[in-house]
Amino acid sequence: MLKKPSRTIKSQPRDAGFLICFHAMASPCEVLIDTDDENHARTLGAIAAHEAWRIEDKFSRYLSHSVCGQLNANAGKRCAIDKETYLLLKFADDCYQMSAGLFDITSGILRKAWHFDGSDNIPSSAQISALLPLIGWQKTTLTETSFQMQQGMEIDLGGLGKEYAVDRSLQLINQQTDAPVLINFGGDLAANKARVIQHKAQPWQIGIDHPSFKKQQVVVSITTGAVATSGDANRFLLKNGKRYSHILNVKTGWPVDNPPSAITVAAPQCIQAGFLATLALLQGEHAESFLHAQGIKYWAIR
Image 1 (spheres, rainbow, N blue to C red):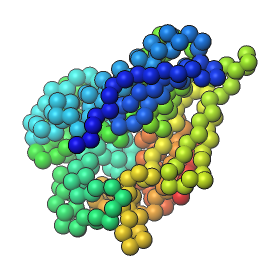
Image 2 (cartoon, one colour; image 1 turned 90 degrees about the horizontal axis):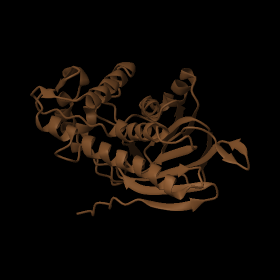
Image 3 (cartoon, rainbow, N blue to C red; image 1 turned 45 degrees about the horizontal axis):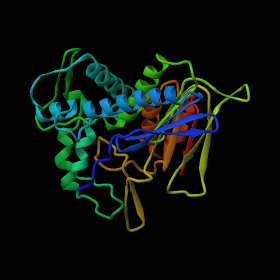
Image 4 (cartoon, rainbow, N blue to C red; image 1 turned 135 degrees about the vertical axis):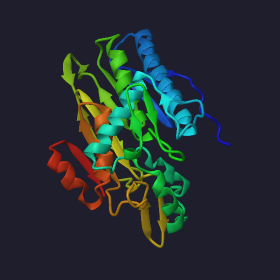
């Protein structure tokens, strides 16, 4: 059994400011604060850490006591939900509608057939077909105070949770400081303003690595707004020379054909960037043309 990472917060000085580090949502997390006040930096970092941990505890599908855990355990029943849960599920509904059903938080149940561990264990068509009737956001009922899905169905907010935590953490930090801040939760990032170096405003320089291509690195300059990356660097299967991405077509239950290995998208909010990056991957070989048509800034690695 894997040992759960301890919930500790560490700080260290940087050339301009302080770096606060912790672990949340199965990811290394960092908060860069452009200030010479270490106590202030640690306070801001703690705000981000505790918000990330709160969201993880509340929405992780791995925890039986979480919102997702309870909704999944009570599938078939109408369940009461609070305002935050409603707003997150409403955003998931918006994503479903905008993607013509390709982005569907009920599709997480396909993990019972697919285990993207780098092996060659491809599930059978029968295994996948047995799960398809349990997928379909249109089979759920959402109101401002309740949620219901059919018995046997599940929801998984993993495709939104980390990005939501980035946005929420930055929002809370902005209420406490006017210092430049960059938040990085496992490669999903947001910044509130330019940093100041030698009395001049300078954008944050972010290097985005893709493990499958050691010699390639995307360097992004960001002043304000967010950047999110989606890809199959660590989650894939490989059999007979064919790579199976973890990006699944919810209509077939099988991986999307020929998606980029990674897509990085810039948007005003991290949750928007994350959705667009994932939606682009769901377009397969047409990912780049889809993003170009949206008129947004993006970087792709194939």
